[in-house]
Image (cartoon, rainbow, N blue to C red; front, side, top):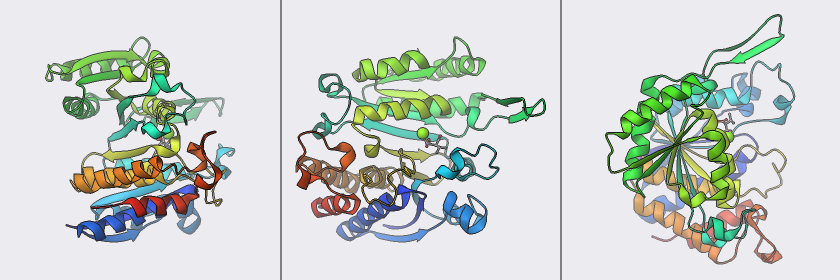
Length: 358
Ligand code: IPM
Ligand code: MG
């Protein structure tokens, strides 16, 4: 297998964790006899500083001409309290998703048994949870018309969905459910929003083509509650861009820590793989970020973009063994973790590499 992978570290801890994800891909190439050619490119705040553009044309060019992308994060605190900033790191991410047609964001929420104690939710509620989110990624209020009027006294964002956008993500969700526990929960706010009523209508129609899959609908407020009340009641969840953004951060608590969650964005062509955590500037540069989400993103990349299931499973097994051996980064450590088992970012990366076998 010969593949081109672009590494897009981006901002904050994106740099630190992606370095570990890349090392894992390099080791996989050695172990499995693959040829991976790596390139890197700029995005986000980094790219703004260097070129004035959060997604420079050279980056987009590289992304269009590779086989898979391992991405870190974008964001910088300097924009957070500057609502007037016209150019923002997040624009690079949104534009990239749109330009590459990455309309389906898969966020698997799987709890490693070893981390049962790391979550703030009771272990007996968590144990056995396994949810696969399909978050729509190129529509909704993220891409609807927005603006200001009335001399800056009023601002608006438009929540908008078209039938084809719902159809294609619904198909992906139902197909995935067929390979799992055969249940799809579609999340919307159809008691209030017209775009949600269209969403529900289309999901119901598509559902008829999958009679073997049970379909249920939940309003987003109720879903937010049920996710932590009874996470085991979910199998596949399909939802819009904004609801998916919010619910998957919440659901990260089911996996112990945001530092554990990987995601895949797929659609028309190339796939993009990234941790769901952001740039985390509060811990940037300290070398303590958890690289496991990036490493697990690398596993998703191998599986989904390259069809290398055995290699992907080997990476996941190495992560599992590392956790079983008691190693933790500080975000997933608990009262029972002894100090000498708490690793920094590169220490955790190395621990996984040491356990990675063909
Ligand atoms: C995510 C992030 C992004 C989003 C931000 C950084 C724009 O929160 O990928 O979940 O809202 O989609
Ligand atoms: Mg988010």
